[in-house]
Image (cartoon, rainbow, N blue to C red; front, top):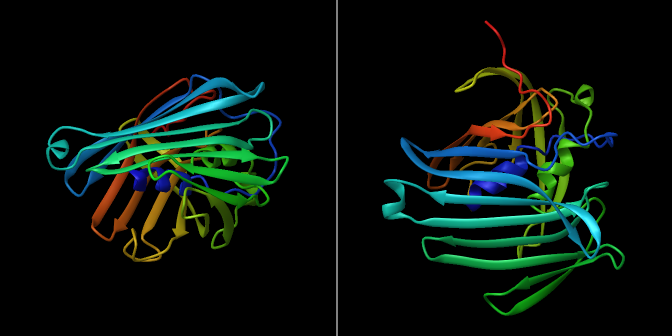
Length: 259
């Protein structure tokens, strides 16, 4: 499941920074994704947007959850929770929580961002250790990046064939660097109907999770919601496909192409 949330972040990293005057999402938004490993309908993941406060600052609080279901859970049980608290105005992350249990592999990590001191402290609760990181410009956590970039790009600035670079603080792996290439537009057939999308090819690190550097392809809606519709990847242990399976509380109309 940690692969899915990594893919989800990558699915929104096509941004050319340009602050929108109004957020494209709001509290109450809920997204559900269905994941397939080969022929197996393996698991579901959800993302929910709430309102909250961190030290008196109004923030968005996003909760991401993932679980294996049905036949897949017999062989490999997954119970993951990711949480992010980020500023309602500029999208800066304040806190990131990652609690996962994937077939006995466990992590319990919290990252607190101190923007006044330009540092972040990662607390590895399971292993009882703390790691300090120096903050870099526009640094995001895995979940806040997804929402930050939905609010910070201009579609007309996307140039086919061009790539961009972004940075992310994930967990004890430190700063994560990658490039992403815009491939153009494509209409995707989904359970909801045909949807116009932007198509992208992230250039990821091969060997550890992904089979090749260009193993990942993704599609993001061209409407004002800017949500991922489909993600496909060839992994070192097989292939994965994630499709949007349900949604609620979208701020803008979900656009379907009429035949």
